[in-house]
Image 1 (cartoon, one colour):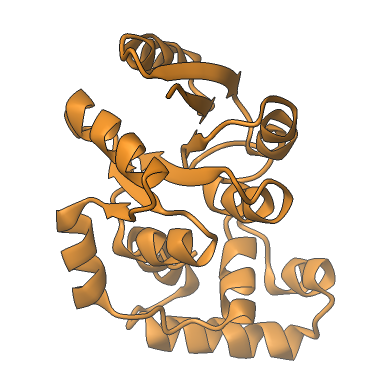
Image 2 (image 1 turned 30 degrees about the horizontal axis):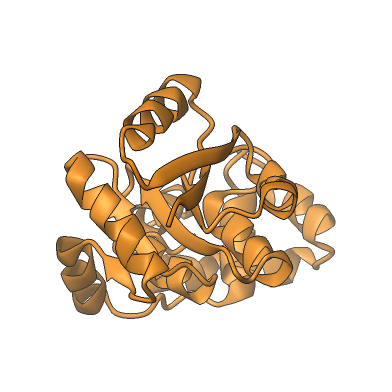
Length: 202
């Protein structure tokens, strides 16, 4: 049986190297390769891969959002998140988005090949160190709206701009920011954003 693969990574060099590496396996065939998260579902619908390997950090849609769209549009395609960012919160969000595997990019090539074959066989495959870190970290304390407001601060936008962008009052934005700062045990919204990012909560 040949396992059909879709690769999604915004770095051409990594995508090309990964494709060449996987093509060395007798039972793998890379049938599609894209550089943007918002191209994943269309490519999967057109090429019908068995497994999609998705990076997290991509333009258009990140890998976690792309995984959720893929689960809805091409449910037979199994998703493996392949990323540099081994953050505990990412693993939890990846599984919620429908991913069945999570492998960090510095894993040995044979680990990735084994993970692909295992998810095709119906297993879930997760990097053991990341699984342990996720259990230790617990759930994200942030609500959906607190995440939205923190994300909106990335560009350096002020409270008024964030309020206008998210259709909230300025007082509500301040309340969400205060709650996020308290829950991340930080002193300001810049620190709260950094901590939430590091823990994979955004």
